[in-house]
Image 1: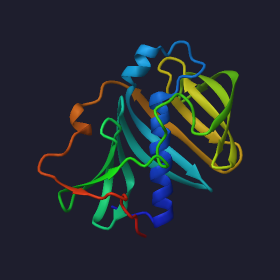
Image 2: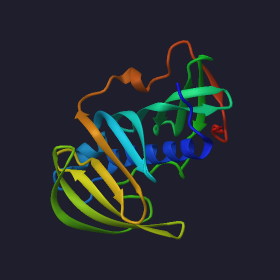
Image 3: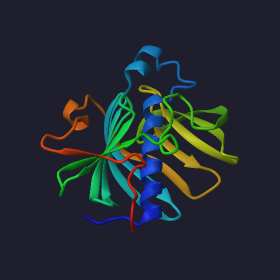
Length: 214
């Protein structure tokens, strides 16, 4: 498994996790996405592609309500070894990194700077305008223009929201060379064990979160 450098790995983990949480919660402007279904949360799997500054990064995503599993093509290197799988458990406010070689589960608090709050808008959202009907990943979608202001940084996005499920299929920045989108997506129930502690793993707590190294 190939490891990512410090800055690249941290940005990739942050952006992918944040985007997937947006997929689970976004519903603004979509009447087909009821409060009841939003409360239950979407279940799906897919291949997520992140593009930044001319480079592409990839992760397999499995989502079940407030539980998310990310399987990275390029593993994250922590102080305790490589972690190719990350499990986000919002119900426990924890993030788990699977250290397969050590049979350990690196447990850290969910970092609010890394993931989106459970709400139907982007972090720091100031304005949302519906542009009209569109298509993304071969699925009917609604296209929005969204403006955010996060920590004094104003940014504009195009956002494609699935008409049927209310999940974000594609998000593109208008102000930098950055985007995240699905190459493939399948709406289907996910196995519970994908989001559980692996059998035989020992927990290792890390209050400040893993320090990703180059």
